[in-house]
Length: 230
Image (cartoon, rainbow, N blue to C red; front, side, top):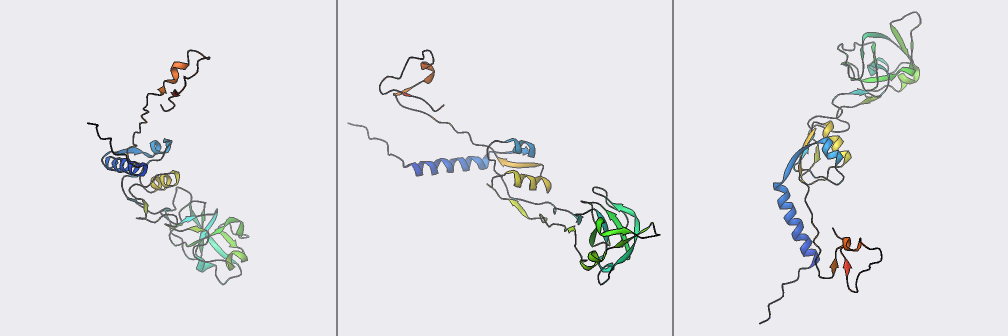
């Protein structure tokens, strides 16, 4: 009695079966790794859970110019404005401790947090020291005409809002997503372990290529095929 031949499986069905098995295993095989490890991966790496930003980016209102933090109300409807300069200063990484009083200005640098009471920034090139007054500045007419709250300011959360979903389970983590995750509180991530793939070559006609390395003149016999899959 002749043994029945095994049922052939279509390529698409076989691929779907392998992928289903990989997904099932992947949900059980996760690992926690640093952002540096993910960045060093040559291939894609996938998030094992949904992650939302832990805080806003930026997490405060920041100046996008070197100049002076001011109140827009002190400039609007004026041809020029004379303002007193606060002794305090707001620099990148060093927030001013004092609040801005009406009719005053505070020196500020690019990337610095807007002091309390200020709502816009005047670039330094739109100002000049008041003549005969070392503690004041005069704001140019054009800067007064364009004055409005938020001018030359990066709003809090303008790039990423707190709670905003950055990745969902199964999403590939590329450079952009990785940067956003690190910047909003995820120096380490739970990711799916990379699957291991093996290629098995079968057939009596396959020949080990190493056997031909001994002689440059040797050639495969008729019907022989050198195994090219490792």
